[in-house]
Image (cartoon, rainbow over all chains, first blue to last red; front, side, top):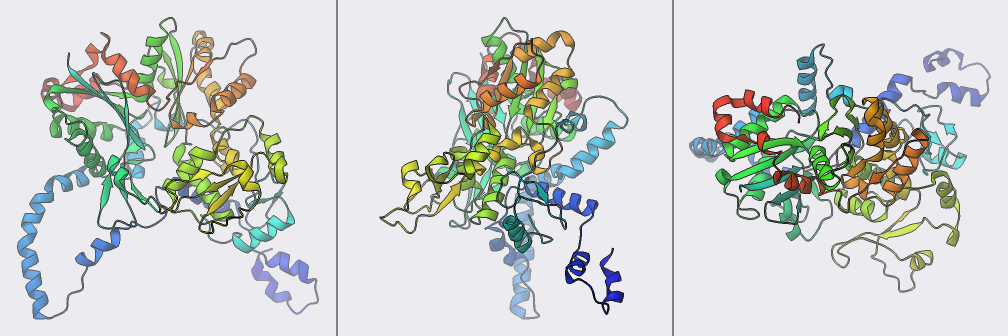
Length: 175
Length: 400
């Protein structure tokens, strides 16, 4: 039952446990898949922290400009120096622009290029799903698990781990 | 004889070997930024001069195993080819450079262009690392025609069957599990259960290399991990480096880890590893453990073999060659042998070869191959490139 319907029956006497169970949000299959994909994507990341040098360069570029004469002077000098800077960086920039592509863009290009061709390619090389059933591990402690969280589909092995799971991860943003 | 350089351009490390040298150099294929030394980037092996590896930031030229950030790669190549490391004379040097399987056309074109027009090498060969490994293998074992290369690297794992050093393209298989994913999973698990280490890629990679292993009897070791005290033979405490007193992390000797240290070194930060030690690298054999719907290694090998002509199959099973960094996990070969044995037909013989150094094997293969006569027709020279352009390249390197 969707949680919204409950509101009409609030006046009636009822078990609080059933009420709780009904009002608990349960994720559907699509959402669970999306969460899983997000987790798998996170496993491919190079870094989780921010680039330590990023902030050092940023303020220079985006310094706000106010109508103070000294600022305009600054502007002028910047304009004068710009052309020479450009020349210096030309080769690098050319590389960046011509060859810079994201993985998704390259994949898309490949997909279009292949058309209906049956030749072996990046997509066909991926091994198919296993014939064997997947094993399940407790998302909290890592031991084999027998139970599934009703709300989000994560696995757990004991009441204790379920408690930890609900306090920390269930229906929350996880990476 | 020409000057030949073999460049195994991996997503995590570069393996370089030049003619006349016997050792293969391994350097990181990455630019690093450290939290402590601001305003400074470390290109490739310059990272050796860095003292603090905590929260090291990686700028990698590869994404998902394919070369996409060319400006990063250029900086690294400039450094390696330049006077700091190799000091190459480009117009007198021929280079064998590796690329991943099913490399995309746009990447191949950029590569040709950079090697011929920017660096102006004398001649090049673009080839898969596993093919070089196959050349080395057939050189060492001339009586064998077939070879199945399992290349388990940083970004993914490829299973590639060869017949007379030609790859059977239809049967090439990819499992999207590599060293990076394993390290990231270990990081994630430790961060949730014990200590926030999401930023410590460098440190956790060392933890993985030091403490993780492939289990030979998974369920039994799972049970061992539940035991307490001395009976738990899997449990280890790992001392994390702090880069002031402890320069490198290490596994605490077993006797010390059971009882709290009386000479309380309070600064010492440890993580306790139990199931993580073998369930994390287990993803290689069961990608479904983390929800990747793909076959594991052993199953993938048989899947790949089933796509090969029937007459090659027994030979392929008898010549399985392991290369790539993940093969360095203890018990990797034994476990794979065990799993393939279970799945393969009873009457067939299985033999798996793990070279002494699986990471540089392909690079050595390139060097061996460059001394043979068979290589001559594969070199694409600067002059041919100038005449024929990208079209000639496509003809010369039809995914050899």
